[in-house]
Image (cartoon, rainbow, N blue to C red; front, side):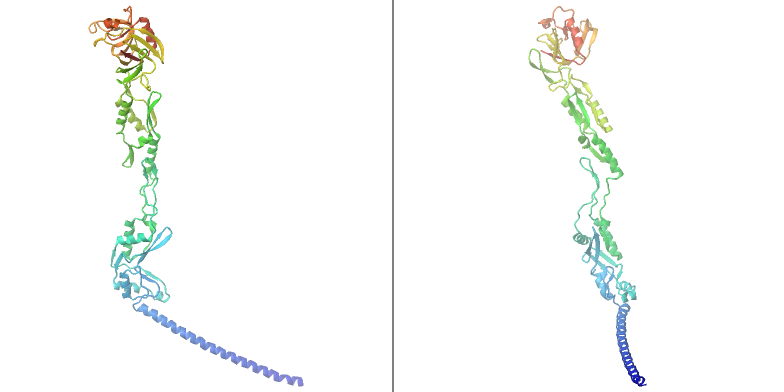
Length: 482
């Protein structure tokens, strides 16, 4: 029983301790509640003050404290009157221009003058909600000025000084002097006429001034891929692939190159044309260079060395009219072509020194002798009788050529020449003068021609006339000299 009695006091002691602890805890809670109430009270007061201030701004005449842009001007925490002054002075007015991935801020204060009506600014303020004030939401509002004046020269100068320099100027596709097609270039040069017009319109309407420079770049109006440029290019390619070659024998030629042809191209109504006003002069120069009819030639004689032979029927004489016609027709076809001039008269060959060549008949009046050379080799020679050396019956010196070969014919008439003579072989070389057989003569050579010469022909022994007839062709030169 003693043990049981000893336990009771302990139980009472523990109960008292728990009561004390509980009391202390309740006291701490009461203090915490008081502090929370005090903090809440102060917070409520601060909130009410803030709401009062915001409400005062909202209901009174001041713009919000946060960023507030009206008509491009920052008017945060300004009264309507202050805002009007700032807006009319274009304070902080700027625009943003994006170029090549970088944004540039361009100030406009020095180049723009605007006038805003106070009532309209106040109306703009009234459109800002209480909640914008309360929650500090940024405000940006377009507002059209009553009047706007833009100094475009100053504005352009400001933009140019702010943006990086132009790297490339825009250019159209074109054909250069050699008719190569040069592609267009898209540059980064700004069309300021259009750009300033857009900026001015946006300022007048109170719009946001934010631009991409590339929207105002100049753009090529003519591109290499354009249908008409490609048509021109294809036609030019044909001209560039053509040439016209005039041949003069086997070793001489004159070439009208593609460069010469292309230098005479021009555009008319967006079509490529070829001038031909140069072709008559070109043909005249060909004639001047290659015509040999009537010229003086150096001829190496068999017995007398070199002689200067002037005149005669042999020689090249270009028909300029027909040659020009053929040239212009060839140019129209736009193809490479090789052609010969058209001749009124021809030489035997196109030689380096003369147009006689190495096949010819040589007639010496002084020696009364004839030599026939074929390809430079002497094939035969014979005495002859030429015309009486007077105006009426002489054999005319010069470089001539056989222009026909005739058998069994009569020469002259009794009515005109006073004779009518039959010959077996006749090879005319200068009008009525020619080589032929003279069976009525018993001798040839010497001085017979001085008193009993022919009427201009070269009389030959019949056998020699027959042999010469077989050797020569129509066109073979006949060189006659004293």
